[in-house]
Amino acid sequence: MDSLFVRKAAEVIIGEYDGEPVGFALFFHNFSTFLGRPGIYLEDLYIRPEMRGRGYGKTLLVFLAKLAKERNCGRFEWWCLDWNEPSINFYKSIGAIPMDEWTVYRVTGQALDDLADEF
Image 1 (cartoon, rainbow, N blue to C red):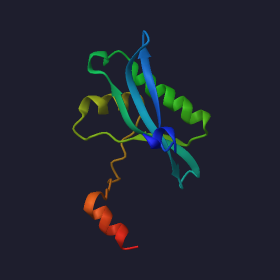
Image 2: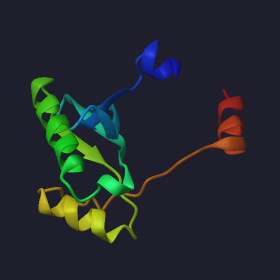
Image 3: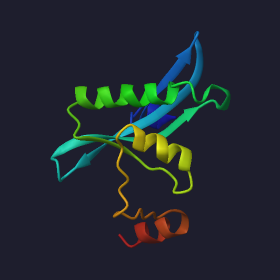
Image 4: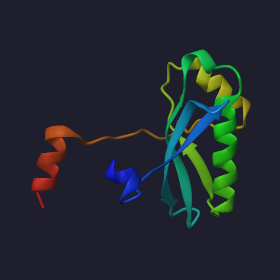
């Protein structure tokens, strides 16, 4: 929780309906050397299952797009699992473009420890 409230490595917005939380979006800034500007990276978008299909997820995305523009960001991006067809169709419907020429790489656990130890 220090990353959210002390160091502010990430931010979160909470979506509410009738004063009750229905979902959240957790995001942070990244930077594009191609654009020479920061961007917003959406790490998690979650809407309670019983509240899905009512536009709350889109509202959170619209808010983040507006925030990106206010903060002079050059882009707003996120990852989506290849098998999540409903989300993929929704994202494409709002103008999102899949970046299929990129492959995500990750170093974690023992591999991260071993790599760091080389320094």
